[in-house]
Amino acid sequence: MTAWNDLVSTVLLGTRRRTLDPAELPSGVREIAEQRADPADQALAAAAAYTGYRRAGQQPLAGIEPEPAAVEDTRPFIPNAARARLGHLLSANRPELVEEWLATVADKGFRVPAERLPVLADAARTRVSLRAPLAAVAGPVGAWLGERNPDWAFLVAAADDTSDDAWQFGAAARRQAWLERVLAADPARAREALAAAWGNEPADLRATFLALLGEHLADEDEPFVEAALGDRAAGVREIALRLIGRYPGSASGERMIERLRACVTVRSRALRADVLEFAPPEPDDSLIRDGIRVPAGPGQGTARLRAIIAATPLRFWAEYGTPGELAGMLVEGPPLNVVRESWATAALRQRDEQWAQALVEAEPGGRSTAALIGVLSPGHQAATVAKLTRGLPVEALTRLILDLPQPWPAALGTVLLDWVAGQRDHRLVAHAAALIAKAVPVACLGHPLAEIPLPGEAAPWRRAVAETLSFRREMHKELA
Image (cartoon, rainbow, N blue to C red; front, side, top):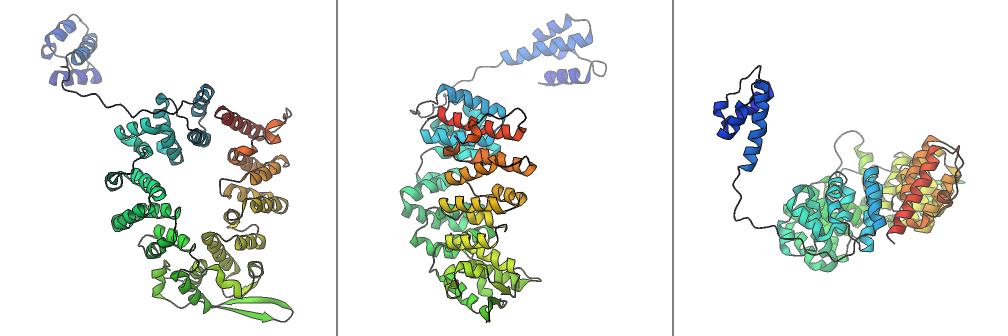
């Protein structure tokens, strides 16, 4: 080994700075080197010969057992046209369309050729949204790869494993997949396992597991969610506040009602609109129990009031008026935007469509408008956005479109494509149109924007929208 290291150093440093001593080389390599007179030629010939010597001179390994093969995957392969499409997607660097393609492949019950899995797994390492659809598509071959390459461990979660070992000893992705499957198949077992492990989990996993529980929330989960309101991690408390809002009669909600009742009065004025008056709530250490922690400093009273309004069941306000009436009332005490934003948070947590509609109508360009539209039913989403396209300035509307929660219903997708079709060239419109073309549901891909030939002078962004819609339509046809 010393001779090899000396040879490497000589080649790297150069023969002017270091001299090669052929006597230190193995006999066969030395004979080849000594046939060269030039020192540089001698060093390079020795390096080439010694490299072959090191490779060919290894003793064969003995007692090595071959790796077990992956479990057989009986799903059909994707059609040939879809194989070609995948190659184009990967070379074009369109990760958002790769995600859609993978989700469609998984939904159709196809699998991809095994030789394509490594490049897809490498792409999913840096784009988390690709992991779940890729794991479903990769199946047992993906799980086999994930067990052997730690960088692809997220593929192991695709294995249909509901054993206790997966929960107790698996990596985070595998445990998350286990909880998601068992919550659907055996909820009592999943809840028991989660409760037993909860106190020992790190904060990020507690937040992930609580969010998963929220997708299968049942009446018996209320005590668990209420206990999570006092969690030491802010991320867990925020999820718990969102989930507790789905229990209209929760003990936490009743406590919030009593706190807020002491802060709100309505002052009637002759011939003029009523006024909502708010008094700042008194400091209350028991708020911590209900997931509210207000840091010390200026504005504590307003911050405390904001948190209490956001956490109070919206049924509290029925005695003061309808959502539409309240959203339009004047406010005294805190700024109007503080009250409206707190109502918006409550409407989002409690998924209250009536309040969401009232708040959107009261402040169409508000910070929470896009999220509130996501609470509405599909038909109301489309009608509301159609109305906003006629009333909001293009700058505010494009910001709204970029923030609209996805996936969009087909009716909303059609409204947005119609809006794009009627717009003049504008930088912000082009930005929003690119998102719309990628995000509208499959049912919208036959829109005239993708069908009508564009004139030669059409702006590049219009051509890009048409090409994206056509590309996606063909992609789905190939997997039909």
